[in-house]
Image 1 (cartoon, rainbow, N blue to C red):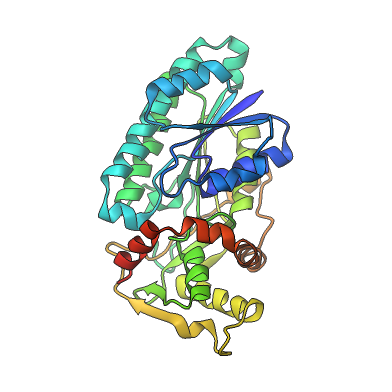
Image 2 (cartoon, rainbow, N blue to C red; image 1 turned 90 degrees about the vertical axis):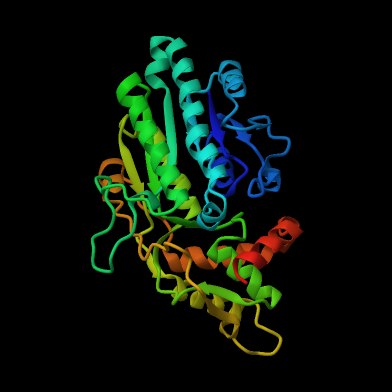
Length: 352
C-alpha cells in the first residue's frame, strides 16, 4: 500500500511524511516543486529509507500526475501543495492562482481519471484529502464564536481566496463526479521545519541575530495556534475514518494575540539563550504599518473532529512553543542553510 503526498518538502508536508513513516510501514511517494519554501533538508532523515520515494515536480503538471498515479497506484492522495504566505500573495497573487487553483484542478482531474480506472474494491477505499486553512472563513470580531465547518466562506486575501476556490473545487468533484474527497481546514501551525518568513520562526531567527522583531500594527491580531505534529495526527485520523465528502476543522484551542506570542518567545529565549548584555529580547520588538486587509481574528472550533473521530491536540501552546524554540536552538545549521540572500532581501523589503 502507498500514499501520494504533495508539497512534501514544505513545513507541514515534511512533518506529515516524517510522522507518517514513524507510525506506519506504508510507503510514501513525495511530490514537491521545491520552490523557496520547499526544502529537501526537511526530509534528510529519510535518506536510504526504502519506504520513501521523492519526485521533484509540479501539481500543475498533468502528465506527471497521471504517471505517478499509474506507476505507484496509491490508495490515497494527501494534498499539502500550496502557496501559503499571505504577504507574498498581496505582492504577487498570480503564483497563488496557478498553484492553489489551477494546480488543485489538475490534481482533481488526474485523481478522477485514476479513480475511474480502479477496481470496485480499490475505488471504494481510495481517498483524496485536501489540506486547507481557516483563513477561507474570513475574520471574526472579538466576541464572535469560533469557525465551525458550516461557517460562510469570506476570504479576504488573494491567498485565502485561492484556497477557498480550491475547497469549492474539491467539493464539486465529490458531488459531481463521486470522487471520494475529504477536506481539512486548520488554524495557524507552528513547530519544526517552519520557513522563517512566518511569525514564530521569524521572531526566533531575528531575536538570535540581534535584529528587530517586526510586529504589524498594534499586534492584537488573534490566531488559534496548532502544533504541527498535532495537525499531522489529525490528518492521519481523518484519512483513516473521516466520512467521504465531509470537512473537518483542525484547531489547537489556543487563541493568542500576535504580541502575546512574541512576548512568550522572548521570555523563553531569555531563559534558554540570554542576550550577552543581559537585557530581554523584548527590547528588539518594533511596531510597523499593518498589513493591507489584515484579518483581526481567527478561531477554530474543532468539536466535530473530537466528537466524530476522537481527536484532540496533545500539546498545549505552552508545551508546543517550548518544544519549537528548543528545536530551532538545536538546529541553527538548518536555519542558516535556508536563510539565503533571496530570503534576506524579501524580509528587508517586507518589513522596511
